[in-house]
Length: 124
Image 1 (tube, rainbow, N blue to C red):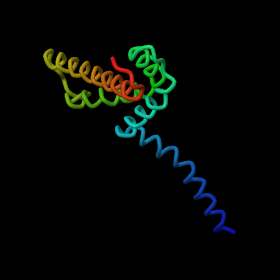
Image 2 (cartoon, rainbow, N blue to C red):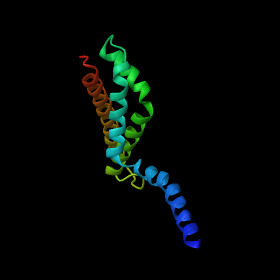
Image 3 (cartoon, helix red, strand yellow):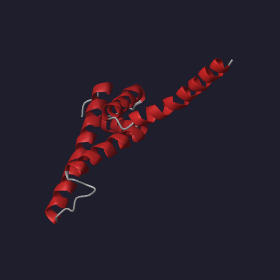
Image 4 (cartoon, one colour):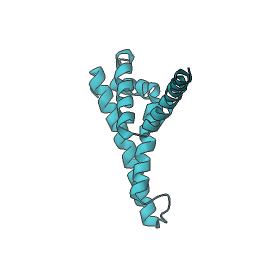
């Protein structure tokens, strides 16, 4: 009887710990990238077919959360490459950091547009 209670308790703890482990995986870049790509692929069939621009706008709206997670992760990587948050940056380093962050943002936007074009068959 005690053994059965113990096993039941262990199974409850394992069930409760599974969502916590999944939350830790959210910081995994590959997982976030896959989730974004899956969101774009899932929304592509229902996106407007007027132009690539309208399809991109619609899918960016649909996948807003996934895009923001990937964006935040990429900006964190840029910041780390400059030694942030502990580093003291000179004015020129701050300008380079701002440019690197803009580049990371533009690169993500370009990747989203390319994925939308691929999934919808629309060309810009």
